Amino acid sequence: MDCVLLLSGGLDSFTAGAIAKADGFRLNALTIRYRQRHAAELEAARRVARVLGVERHVELDVDLSAFGGSSLTTDAPVPKDRPIDAADIPSTYVPARNTVFLALALGWAEVLQAHDIYIGVNALDYSGYPDCRPEFVAAFERLAALATADGVRGARFRIHAPLLTLTKADIIRHGLALGLDYSVTHSCYDPDPEGRPCGRCDSCALRATGFAQVGIADPAIHR
Image 1 (tube, helix red, strand yellow):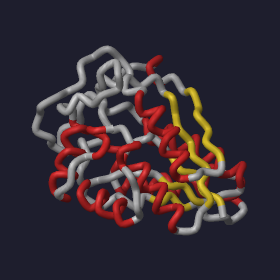
Image 2 (spheres, helix red, strand yellow):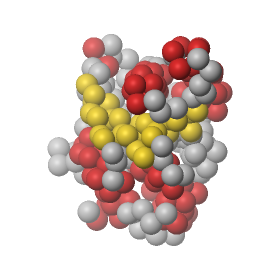
Image 3 (tube, one colour):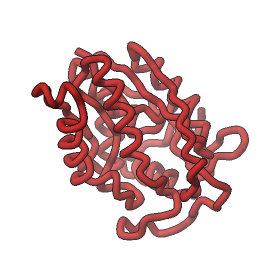
Image 4 (cartoon, helix red, strand yellow):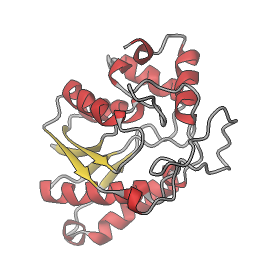
């Protein structure tokens, strides 16, 4: 049984992929090169795909920098050393990114005759992005039933977001229980030219807090 996994190379999508595999799915991974400044995640996605043993890994170019509107797709500074407030949407939000990504995953899923899509969004330890909320995931699942030939014929598409209500620490614990080696992942929004994490952006802060709460060192720091 096939599924499509949206794979960024980060900790969350790695864990979501491992859960999909444990659920018995054959993984087809989709990574989007959207001209993100943290392009080190693309090599991480390749590492993760190898570890997960995906059936096929598609890297798709969708240049969201043509629109701008985010510090991840422009030269605008990435916020650092800030208190993370879920009510304050930061400049690292990429307009409609998860909507675009899920639409692309849905198109591939329909071609594969796969009706299950896994995404590693999280609504607890996150930066306030509107497209990481349960309401968004549920709405997209309803859209999938209306927007596809398979849906019109009665097939049900399921958008699996297994990390949606977990803390970062709980996500890490879940992944460790599945035997995951998080050294292959990359989370930083603004790495240096060698791909080393800045340690100060929201993503680095959330990751560091998660590992600290679990009580282990982040293996990616020493990769």
